[in-house]
Length: 182
Image 1 (spheres, rainbow, N blue to C red):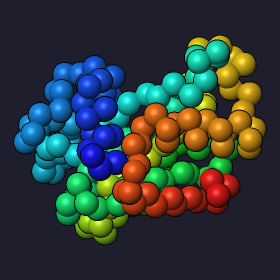
Image 2: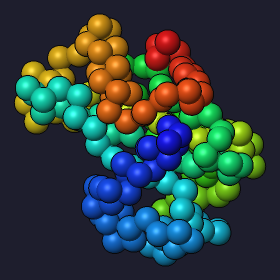
Image 3: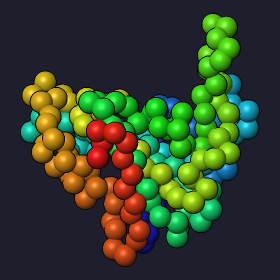
Image 4: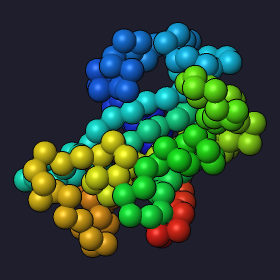
């Protein structure tokens, strides 16, 4: 089983935790009609899930997984870690390397629109964005002590995250980081 397949199967098993509240599920070819402003469809591209990385404090990391536009089963998985203390991976997803860009200009009081990003890295890889450490983006802790995260504990959380999410075997995992993420 490839890493991309393992991540996809795991995320499908928890469709109720998707950002869309489980309204659409993840069915081949199904569009997400409630996504306003998208010119085109999201089809079957995006998965989101929480992974427990600290059971004692109830700390969970949130991730976004996006299938490659090429061959998801054989293309590498690229893990993206955003730099900066508790910066969300959504910035990279919607403004840098993801398959869609948020169009916010000109601002007229309406919701932002989504536009396909022709230079997305999904052309060559499956993208795995993790909201790390706990407290970044949608990642959270049930106990306030779970937010007390330093370099060592953040690294251990990522190791736990990867051991839960990816069943690597001989698959290719690429790791890319920005600024402090490295």
